[in-house]
Image 1: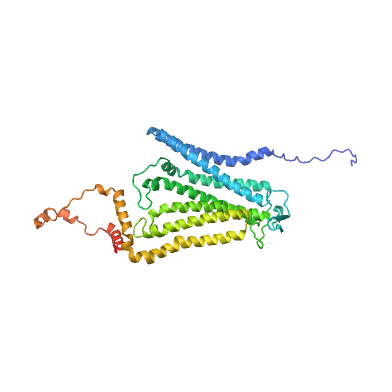
Image 2: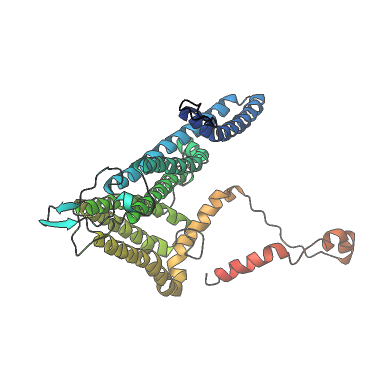
Length: 410
């Protein structure tokens, strides 16, 4: 038995080599890079096909105009939505102290002179361990996804922008506002698109920010006292609601022009209720929205979470009363009993502009008086024509009945 202390050490299995971090990073990027490559190839192929086709038709200039308009709109929308979403989420995380290494245990309420202890749990004590690096990456990825969908939606509205950019006038003014009809065809849809897009982006940011503050338990108001961190969260939400309310005020201004498409009356277009009630209701909502913006600006300086809930309830009640309840009651109990007297001017507008739209004024009317010398021999010679006379056409019959019943009072 060998007892020498210098015997060779036992051979060990070789340790597997650890791959380099850069190699792992490159491997992780292969899948998204392959997906991006496939999307790019598909887009390039589609544009190449359109370019060749429009080149054969001598429309190459139109192709490049559409190409640059589409992608400039996509890039502008992507940049705006990403910056707006990412900026608000990052501010929410900063207000939650989720990106700071140390969190202050107390916050001084400067306006009241009292100290409000921060009731938020530190990030490392939450059920899920969220490191600052993971949070930063998460808000970037979320913002990129939202920006992509927003840019895709805006990208598809290139024709709306081109109509806005190159549309003209028709030389005909509507009877309600005295504005050229071209405004409703070319300008109004573009303004509505911008208003709707900004509203959706703002609502998305409010929901995302609300989830962040709800997760970190910041949206609380204890006996009217709001701590600094809680106050920052309330002020942030108030700022987003101010943007949303200003957007709604702009939307109510645009809704004024939508009254020319009203279906509340007996005909398609503005009627007595739309002209005398809905117009006032729209201005009331604009005024209420402006007042709400002022109160939200005040709430940014002196944040109170309870004030947001009370203000939202009042705003909703005014909206339901002014836009839904009062016009419907006015139409039913004031207009309908005297439709003939109240709706006659608007019926005249409806008939006049329908004739203009279909250019019916260019039609020449010719009278064909009935002849009294019709004999059985004439009918026999034109038997095919007589049998082809349709006394009851089922296609327009139901529509005709509906129209005559709808305007029976006139």
